[in-house]
Image (cartoon, rainbow, N blue to C red; front, side, top):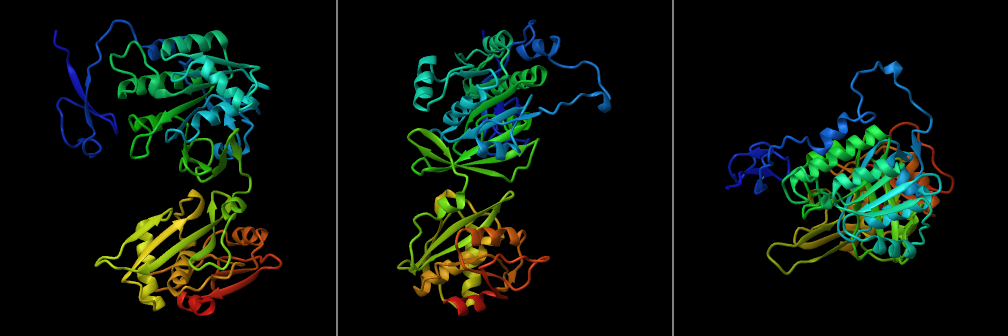
Length: 457
């Protein structure tokens, strides 16, 4: 018997009757894949059966003043950096998706928080990639205690739901969503329909049972969660674990959070015994900074409500090619090319025929204009081969005419600059609001980059 097939878009999940090079819904190219159509069965799907069970979903609407809330809506996971990104702690009844590159530390992070959660809650750790013995060996290496932690090596979603109803845990961890499958869906694990169906069932389980669910998701080569884009819309919180595998520092960033801000970051360091929190990322990122070296400058950026000092390094050398090479790592490439043009036109430096390399130390990605001035100074310092003073930091946005514009939260930035031992700070002449200068910090106010270059270099 010939099996009927449909074509799905891996980005938005849209179905089409035939293959197309471009998705008609989202406009993405080469994202249409062939999948066997789901057979129509008289037996309802797992998600549908669970929805109709008592206590899973309310059938009658309620007035808002009749809905009861408790003071124990949030609880701490035991890792302050994770709680910061989540908005103050995990929320009961929420579904959190944690994504990241292979080997970045997603499973390690989830297993480490079990050590604290097991002190006051029952945790069920479901793995579709490892056996119970492998998980226990990794837990012993991470020094995770086993009281209150239950392990289950399972890929069948129905068995997972039955285990939850039998054990009635407070926290459920699923590693990973791409390995789970629903027997009612006629496709392979990890396919679009399987990921959507499994996530929908977990969402109904979290809301109905007031269960906190952490789901680990793999990422594709573009860096987004593998599967349909609608997956990120279904969950309450999307966390991305970023960083290079060969580097020690990891950054946890929230791309979506229904219960808090999406601007906070958490910083971890990967060691032999697992992930270690970095409560003072500024000091860690500046460790090992060379003294009196041309081509480096320090700035202060805001990651949510936290000021973080970052070191920007630049290397500008004469080019032997017809088209000079430009490389930017940790800084927007288009923004760096714009600053190079402003530096040549408004700063008076002939760097058009030079190769320019820009790098942000520690794996950070700077995407706010406050880092413009430090970027310009590092490139000018490398070009003139004159170092920027070690005790000086630079904060300011650079315009196309070379002027310096004010930035937000300047008082918090200056306090962090002074706390790390810097004695001077280069800032725009005009600032927003009343500015409180920390004791022992000298402010150098300039109106454009030409003045900054004449003072420092």
